[in-house]
Length: 189
Image 1 (tube, rainbow, N blue to C red):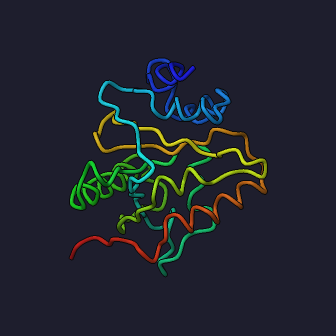
Image 2: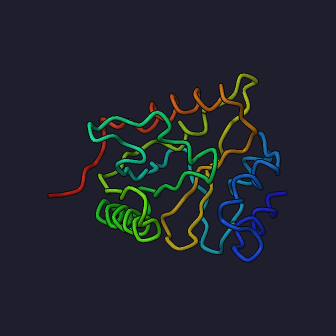
């Protein structure tokens, strides 16, 4: 069933904003989830290993406050659209910063009436730690997929199970532990 990912990541077949719901609809768990994570969604996809670092871009005001702490819902994208990351072993700090600046600029151009975002830096979490985030039944909440659609180092963290409001709060706290804001790699001066 991992082959369903090809259609989910085909922009002509599935709008980007629907990917997360479609992945949850696949009901991946246990061995099926592991097989899906190893499936080559794109020709250049290489599976994300447990020991890989995943860099998450931090922007103000959507994920980090001006005081340098996370907003309460800093990782809510993981439950709505997927959480975009950079695979540290396939890139370098300069390219991660470049990606972060591009991402903030692209948002600001698309959303001129909203509060502009400022790229602050990135934090790195271990893929294995994301895969350890589980519900009360012991099932993984997230799959980590290689998604080199426009960038060879890109990976997404997608929800694979339905969640309730209590789960969302639990997940937010765990993401704060995986991606420690205190370890942010700031923009070089």
